[in-house]
Length: 408
Image (cartoon, rainbow, N blue to C red):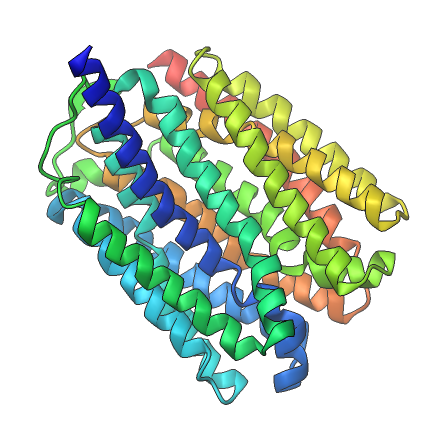
């Protein structure tokens, strides 16, 4: 009983600390987008120009995330995670000091560099430190906290900006990140050195891929299975980034919602996603057919987004549909992480998670410019059509991953 209690307590501690870091990562990703309407008026720039800020953040994060994964395998996940969170927090604080739009561009790149560490570091810690029988719930907690970070950003940032101004709102966000760094320093000192109390998750493959062998690493990362996982995340991010970054101005324009109503709708979508993740985490620990969960959830979410794009709704109906779409997509999240884990050789979790999850940043960096241009041209419905199309395409990559893993 003591061993079980110790294992549970340690697992909860690991999930909590890693979850807090992931909350901060997602929260920071929407700090500026939540304030796009304020920045649009402050700096007199187009939505296309504002979309470039998002493109630069995710582009920098995506291009360096694989390198961050190698650093995790080489130097340790906790050390890399704290370095990235500190850089991201400081870059966010610097946003509040910007006196022109152009000052935001290099700061977005710095924020992206800080953001690059989270998935390889977080998932490496969870995979090696959480007991195997709780790993599905560990991944679910990680994803849930990230989505709660997304959900917190629009309401908190807009509320603070309306009470004071957008600079105060951004300053508060940066200080929150530094507080989480302090929590890690105080309570997370043992995350790299102490082994898990219960057996940790073993990788699907018995092969160990050394970090220093370039040819083996290239062969691993560019295998059909890993590329399929990468594309899954790229298409998923392309689907969600429009709702997260341009959902508020799109709904104000398309449905005539107020700023507060549109903000609540985006928050509802993200909270719905969080609720779906909770359900999906339980389901992921009770089945080995994670592909079925992923496909069903993505198809349902795609159809709901298409329905929103093709009709005119009031604020209540928009909120209901977005919450439902969020729940459908959220249920797939723990299963997608289990699919990636199944494809990851022993000793390569940092590299594989870093490379695969850089697909999220790739998809997030390529779409905002196009959607910002669509809004500038008076086509807010494009945000929802794009989300529907990309969600549907993700199902093809899930089928491919399942085939490859089953054949291995």
